[in-house]
Length: 236
Image (cartoon, rainbow, N blue to C red):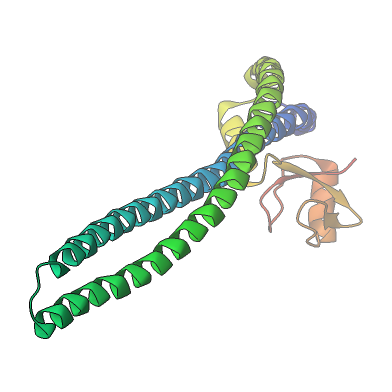
């Protein structure tokens, strides 16, 4: 069994590398999340763009159909006027005139509806134009950010590989059970498995350390854990 003091020195070296590995992985995850966040914003803009475009197209179709129906009504009115030449009684004339007025009133209503639709189409076109410019701008930003992140990720990945190799050099000098315990604590404690006692407090969790435990750590006849956070304790 190795001397606990020497083991602690080795664990400190391992801790430095482990924390760096943890921070590198954190940076890698953070970079990926930033890209995903930007993409989610872009996806919302694209969805809104598609919805506006569909709404605009639907209104254009409605306007077109109403205009075609107006033309149909105008033709019917012309047909009714042509029939006036053949009528022989006032009753027939009034009936034809009533039919024309019904169609004229319907045309007036349709023309107002078409006018409103066409105005709304113009408004929608303006919104679509602005959103299209926004989408293209965000696409350019995302591509620029992705290029930057990809470059950073390559650097971080290389740095991570180097640190993992450094760790492999230290690992064989630590008993397997102790290494497994160290890794378990580090994984659950943001990459930090050991903590310094300062002024009778654990620096990592800020809990008070009793004088008795502090003396045990100072003598370092065995590795001692913080009773609160579970990290290995040491005193410089």
